[in-house]
Length: 310
Image 1 (cartoon, rainbow, N blue to C red):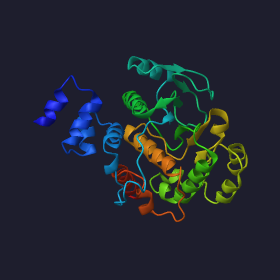
Image 2: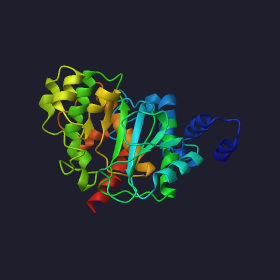
Image 3: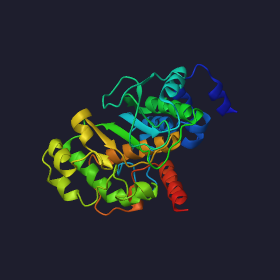
């Protein structure tokens, strides 16, 4: 009864409703389901009001790794096919998402742009590129975009990928080195929750980082890190985008228009970036990875591993 009273109270903001529901003892997943399904938003509220209660799946104390609310600036590139680009633009604009059809370009726009991509097979292939998004509000906008893509019957196949850009303006050289080395050492585990077409070096558009750790550590600047250690944009973590946009691009994930997959991947990467601010893994294990991921993300990963192993 009290749950419904909170949900029906029009004087409460969404954040306050979430805070009160959590205070009742509901789990974050239950609260997310009751308030629209955005787990990331609920996690941010939880981390803000109960930071001392945040724990890893392995039961480590909060000071081992403190989960940081997702307030990062990020961008998304979704590759798909089967929707004519102007038709998709109209549908997005009607849903309140400002979208423009453009020729192929690498310019960051203040709107969603729909461009061609010669690497995509299938009729009416396209790449949908976001403007700069931020935090939970950005994820909510992304949820709407995914809904429209599904309504317009967008498809994905093995030629499609999902690329995530994180703002790297405040990420320095030591943290970037940690991130790249950590990614290389966890790569085999990350591969296990990706399709076979995105694992190891099977895909020329997202090459492995494994074996490049020495070159990464030898770099003396972000420019040499991008220019020598990872001299192409076609790695699972692309630093060429840093030279152009001051972002780090993650290219590992397979194509998808499923919001749940994209949002879990974004939050997984966010946690990895935050972990890498001060930490470097020596021996990569699945248990070690769970120490800096929320239990719900670990559950999602385990489910993906099971699905892809079937």
